Image (cartoon, rainbow, N blue to C red):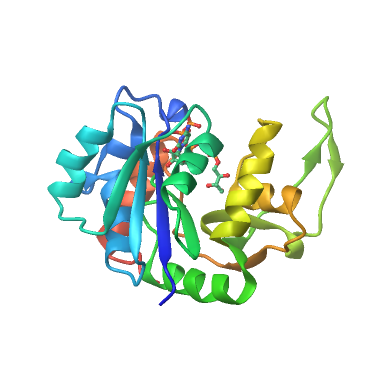
Length: 233
Ligand SMILES: Nc1ccn([C@@H]2O[C@H](COP(=O)(O)OP(=O)(O)OP(=O)(O)O)[C@@H](O)[C@H]2O)c(=O)n1
Ligand SMILES: C[C@](O)(CO)[C@H](O)COP(=O)(O)O
């Protein structure tokens, strides 16, 4: 049987949230933000979960989230690094033996059962896939002086979410190569695979509700969606 490991990232400091508590631990509809993503993977067909936290936050996460809410699939809690890609690499090292990994932001509490299922099916077929949705607004590429330089054809522009799912050997090797020359402009996992391998990354349907908690108003939006009980669309 193939082994699917979810790597859930919670090693950030949430600078754009401007809160003294890291955003993944803020209370959202009565529970920590991070709880929701872990619960979604717990209830999925994923084999196990690696949780990546900030340095010194492992014990806190275990006590306040994993044990308290009985998240039984967490097989390891490991410290992350300064940038998201350092945390991903820490998670990949701990996921050794997986056939496929689904890399997910712990700050995306509205990941649904359907997105996880679609990701698991698509990664078996394509080896690399990321959830996303077509953009609704017109997008402009700006020049250095803030003037509109280019308007990409909207039907070809997607906003990218997580999970980002890969064959384990493919993504592990891509990260290992990328870290050898440290590119700080890396903002998602697909970029690493696109730059370091010949593998095409398939875009699959996410969900407009699968938002990332980044700034304070995102908490209000996520709370509204959770209260509607509509995360599983
Ligand atoms: N060094 C880091 C940075 C980010 N993350 C995680 O990656 C996800 C997406 O990152 P982002 O929203 O940018 O989180 P932060 O880096 O915490 O936020 P900010 O950029 O505002 O500081 C989050 O779940 C975050 O905890 C991580 O594990 N390790
Ligand atoms: C991976 C990601 O969530 C896809 O939208 C996003 O790129 C993370 O970026 P951030 O700079 O860490 O917010």
